[in-house]
Length: 295
Length: 170
Image 1 (cartoon, chains in turn yellow, orange):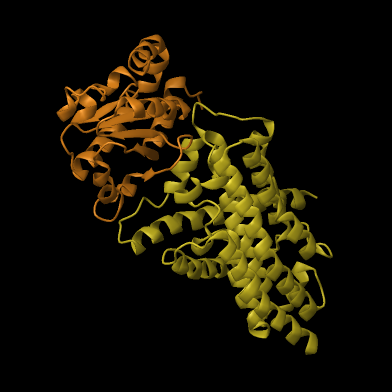
Image 2 (spheres, each protein chain N blue to C red; image 1 turned 180 degrees about the vertical axis):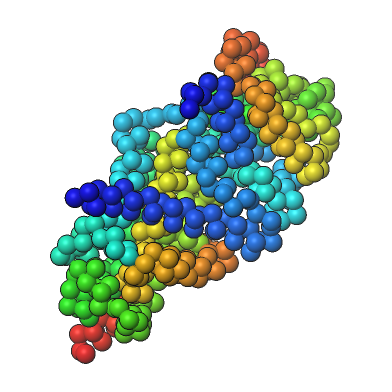
């Protein structure tokens, strides 16, 4: 019991630290790609602290203020469902399917909050966010089904255990792994898929009316979101890890490849993004599913 | 451990604030051209934690470049009042100081400080990116010592500012 409470406190802090470290590294890395010196490495901490210390905090209603909190709550709950290196909180039977539902709570919290702000830019942004989610969820569900069929279980910790000693799903299901990478990339909203926040089109989309501590909470949520999406990919295809350092190295390798793509690509339109997700990743995921069924 | 006084809390808050300043730039006048080199690889203002942002709710600095005519003043006041405290205003170029080359124009306001409280001016026509960066560094010093209190002045002297605004806007 004491151990469970301890894990319940440590796991979100660890997730936040890992997500924040990725945010720090990304700011510097992007600056170097653009041939700039870049900010100090701890700049995201200054940004979050400044936002939380703002004297004014404007609110457009109760749901507007609750939106970021719902988003953070959804992210922390999904942290508990992802096994990392001995910190298995809520990994019961069937947790992979529950996780797919819980991961949508963050976007829905944002949608509620942004809808309450009654700003047209926020409405456009959130309709784009939900449409994009509609796009990448179809291939995501197909690859989750093929991984579950491959290992005959939907228990995420059992999937991780089955991939021990280097029998990664990356080698046995390479097509699914590629689709999983593209889907994770889309879910993070990195460059060709940054339609949601596109500052030049919809002025940061759902966040347009958020400022002060609400925006600070949304930045904290972004750290959790980075962690959840990449950790799920590592657990599904790179075999999790036995200790936290190897887990961090695997997550960082995935994130590093993503950063390479991020700053060199332009932006999709929303209809092009959905068409892309429903064409190539879906077709490849279906081929991978057929291979698993035939085998 | 003794309890921290209010001044100590404020000085720590100011220390954090000056390291992360987000800017919204109002560029209907001239001088917007000086900002891209300031932001990008030539001068890179992100070194100091400064970043351009797009909405008034998220920004800390309102940078007004060049002249302001009466029509755009109304929008500047709206943007300024939408920003969240603490907020800072920088007037960029001679036109915000005394009208510059538009000193006798009927459609341009001469002195920004009569309508919204400016914390800092950058004189010159046009100021170079070096001058912009040095102004930001100076603003950081003002924030650190608690002297950048334009938003407090606006609240305290609201009647004065509103009357000046009414005179030009009608």
